[in-house]
Length: 205
Image (tube, rainbow, N blue to C red):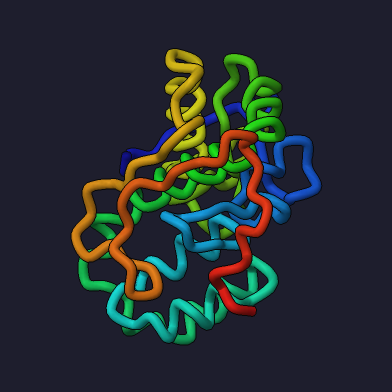
């Protein structure tokens, strides 16, 4: 997924700010909390950043307890030197898991959002990051790896082919030492109504 790609912005489902039409695809979007094998997280950004530190549950607890996704990211960067050594080898798999879980626990809202994209490429527009997103390069073009947008596109294709996928359970990726709060992450079972009441409880906030 490392190759750069070029997109015409007006021919894509583009997300940049969370208030944009497709802003729900952003990891910074709020109101899309979920569970990771019984552990509540406020956003995919919280989950992703906490996953850097499987050997430091106290750092994970700090990150998961912060109220906003951007502040959770900033807290993680205070400990960036303690990021797991193989992070660049596993981070795509972990982000894919984040996307699957946030969909599973927020099915009505996110099904509608994916549906609105039709057959358009999904692209994160970023002025700074051309790995997770794609940067404006002039002429209405965006250029970058667009890893996050491509993971959302992959997910859209999966749920289109298998509409029942992720509605009952979500399996953890094949990642060694994949732990949150000293718990080895396995299968997450999804509530039947596809909502997440009480998901905050295990954070002990």
